[in-house]
Each structure stands twice: as C-alpha cells, then as structure tokens.
Length: 184
Image (tube, rainbow, N blue to C red):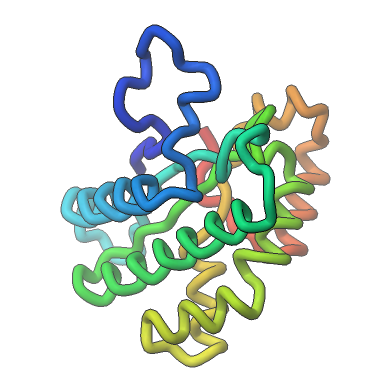
C-alpha cells in the first residue's frame, strides 16, 4: 500500500486545507495518482491474489467545492484513474486500487457522503459508459471494474470524530457495494 494523500511538502510551514491540494478536480491529482499506481505495480510482490492500494484525499476540501461542475470534475478524474488501473492490470498483471479517505471538513466527510457520491456519481451510468469506452469494456464489466478499483480508506479515528457507528458504517458500505480497501 502507498499513502497517496500527501503531494509535495506535506510537513510544510502551513498545511491545513492545503494538504488536500491538488484535489480530484485537477489533472495534477490524476497524474500523481496514476504515477503512484504505476510505481506500486512495479514494487508489488508477484504473489497470486495480492492487491495493492493507494490511499488518497477525500475528493477535496469541502469549502473548495462550490458547483456541480466541481463534483463532475472529480467524477471524471476518478473514472479516468479507474481506466488507468484497468490498463495497468492488463499490462502488469498487478491489481491496484484507489482508496478515498473520508475526513472531517472534506467533500467526503462521512460514510453517508461517500455512499451518496459513489452511488450517484462514481458508480453512476455516466461513469460506467465512460469507463466502458475508455477501457474497451462492456457495460457490466465497466460497472464491476469501477467497484473493484475504487473504494474507501476507512480511518476509524475520522469516523469517531464524526460520531459514526462502525457497525452501521460497515453495513451501509456493504449495501452500497463500496469496498473498504484500506484501514489505517
């Protein structure tokens, strides 16, 4: 696994909301995450069934999301990254996933936020059609690939700060078909 959250100087003089930038609205986050996935595919041992995960920012800092176009940009970049992961798997034989990490004060702050975003946007019809076209997959295979390659990093400390019940979180994620790819 790799921690793909930090970009640049993580322990700089002023971190605060800057730690979430570049966020998933930007091509910089997409390129960075593609590069991390490529590196992890090279580093991952060749054990059968072994998967690698890269954790990442929860979309963006909540105050930075002002319009539906912001949400659409995040969705498009995540689908593009899923396409990269599908292609990487074909080329390398390695299975890499991306785990968005809900966190206080972020676009994905709670499990309810994650379930809503994944259900309405990441796993939605537009995403399935885009991934199918990008990766040369049929609709069912594209839908499965989105669910297989994109999920959550569930940090129980963050969930506790949001007063979320762990059992309820697990039930809701399971019902929504959102994989927990990492738990720090």
